Image (cartoon, rainbow, N blue to C red; front, top):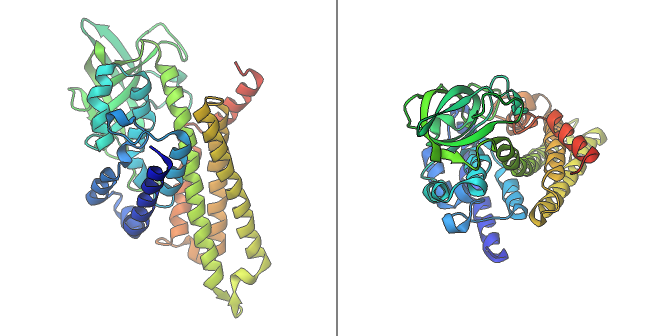
Length: 379
């Protein structure tokens, strides 16, 4: 895709979000659901396949384009992006980079068109940011694996048509060894999806537990080689972390925009509160941090595209931008004062929605470990 075509895509997405998604934010937050017509229109814009290869019907955006799109998506409720984020991100990229030709040909066109939704089933009760405690098993039995285990907090699980599931295929292995990735259609016997979780924020982005009870999965469902699952998961997460960092930049832009407008028009003591220096300080601090986050995301994306760095940059960007968003959202609530604590006010929703980004796809603490270990041993 050339620069002109990408510019048109970006403009179309920006217009759609502001005209059709933003006016529905309160409804989505209250009803914990994305309207069907929004899903259909998002598919028509190519959003279910922006990061998937053009040969399979996707837009084939490189990382430097991905993060620009992510900033636009971050302007509105993160539930909107979550609807198709896994198709493009951690699940879709596992198929793109490690899937067999038949797997790519069968699933990627459907993912790109929005005909199916994929879920990335890695997290368990004792295996969150660190998958070494993973307990799910896939035991070879004749022409199939028998998959058993329980996954937790799986995004889009109630909507999923296919799962990328991580399980131990080597029962003797420990830690990150012996884990494999399997492509598992949601309709196979033995799969049960629990009710979607009630959460602090990000209403409309559904997560659930998924139970695999002796599910027979053919051997050709294996993604990559047996025992390669940990590497597949980490490679998929690296791109996702940089994308999430850019989403946080977009959310911070929205929070600051709301705070600036409120400070400009709201009066105390007969003059706009933006005339008070302590309010100005809150806005200035947020702008400076937002500027740094935006710059970091752009530089990390360029290094990702060139192949120079696909580990340090994504982790550093996710660490800084997710923490930055929390601070910007907090200041925005402070600028609004008591109104910022009221349901139905945009900055109140952003404050709740922001908190999750420091936890999923690797907590802030995990990002610090990734960064430090890479600095100490960059091999």
